[in-house]
Image (tube, rainbow, N blue to C red; front, side, top):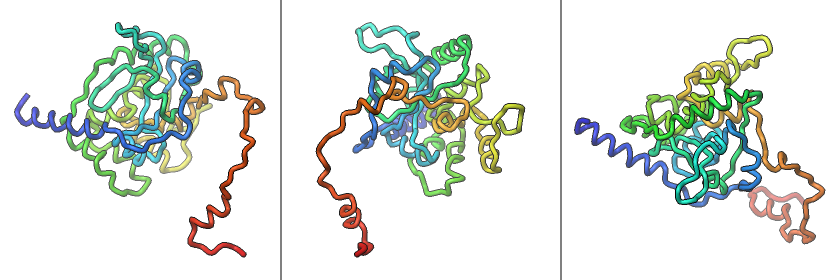
Length: 276
């Protein structure tokens, strides 16, 4: 490695560490119940996460989405650590780390969403999991500083151009931050994520000209984002609370009445005069 490459590598790792730093004040609206989430997940499910890192806020802005990260649930195929700690059941790509296996509890305090591929055969499910396991330990070249800089400066751009900011450079940092590895895994078993661009019998087709152009633009797996699994017509959104057998009649409501008058609170926070 030349002196310039060595300098770029050091700078890239420093930038990755800064982008991976947590933002204070993050509070999930509905934190996941670990036991229910674990009981609901199946191998091959994509777990979307609303992250709390500096890079997370930029990805959410550029993709107009709540979700900034995605991981694949692989079940019990990975061994339990020698120290007896929790078995890793997720495989993900993290900036600065590469492809790693992590325990499910890592995201127990985050807003999450389960996206389940519908109709996936047991054989393809195994191939999908094996593909991800085979990528463990993969590192990413962080010397493409141009790819990293965009996440430091989310300059105001029209909505229709934000997504394409991720494609600038399309180097290794792009593949590390976005959901590229998971998209590549599904491509290996020929399972679709986005709708077809051209109409086919029984297929789903994007109607608007912009949607078709956008789908064509991100056909390469390195340009997929977590949002695509949420919007995909081929993935089912599974909510653990409902899957566990939700019954609203069993809810216990507080008998105390809130002392806050929502109408008064609303008028107090508004500059407009209240109605007589």
